[in-house]
Length: 515
Image (cartoon, rainbow, N blue to C red; front, top):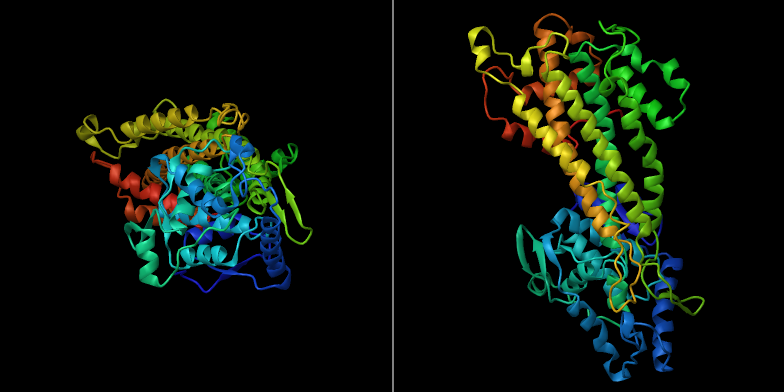
């Protein structure tokens, strides 16, 4: 159950990215709206579909086969079985499974779309989706098998299959059959009505849910990269004038200006301006706002496109109950999410590349302005056998190279499939999965850079080249917190557990940045 008393009512206000993230974290409870407008949309769509069926109307995926089989008319006595067959024949997903955290985001995203009221779904289906979230029953969903149009058919079949009691779910730390879990809680599996198989599966919920989670992580990494740059500048005895307010006023990218302001404030530039021995620092410090600013300036349009998709009815056909229309189209196409994810990948990977170059300067005595080789604090003859951050820098370079490799856009690799019915597809889910991999690798680089920068600042403070108390309070608090779990690196020791702890701290957003 949620850790707070906050509740969101689906079918009322527009759902935000943060709502999906909070539901995934179990910090936000879910309910269905009881407003007259919402109930009328749901009730009228159900009534309209029932009337069409009674009148022997032709509805794609209800009285016809799916996809290229649209020309096949299904006998009315078999119509009730059709949606169950859809869930079954798409049960062919492979690859790793989405986590329970990601699965909750997928459930919440699908419920958001169905709650638009244009999918022809019944109250029992909406109520069961709500109950799955409330009881933390999460379908086990394979990551691979979607081309992103007709939506996320194969992965979402595992949601539909769980709701009918035929697939596995995560529940209380175990993987169990969904029917067993529902029986133990007094919940009834859904009997899919005509159109409900399509309504659950024929949409963009997987890619959009992952996009919401990716947005949240990328937004945090932009802030973290600014903080790491400030710490690296302090460690390198950099020139704080590179982030001057007047300087950035003449290049009016708002996000870039915001990054420069954050770094300038972190350096306490107004009260303690720092003049380096070099007139101009290397680009990985001096141009950091320009690199990070690309992501920061992209976040608003990322949000717009993700939230528009999130709050859309994106299955097919669309059922307009009040107007009594069945509208056949292609709203399952995930092109907007594909574009956002393909654009996010290089913007985030460039943060990895930036941080990797910052580490390279910190460890190299040719560029680090008097810091010891590889940031080792070993002294005397022992300094000849200790190697400090040498391997950490190699690792960061490896993570960076892999992140950059994954920036190839997925959306340009459309494949004609399903008897050339799905002859132009979005690849949005592959793009979203790629983005998550780029984020993971970048977080590993930033963890490495953060520890290296803290080690460098620690050395400056120990050598009386930097006064701890001249650091702004937020920077000081974060530095002190890291020093609590990161002991000075004097003699060599394995750092893998420390790095994993730091990556986890980044992914759980341990430090509040620039609130």
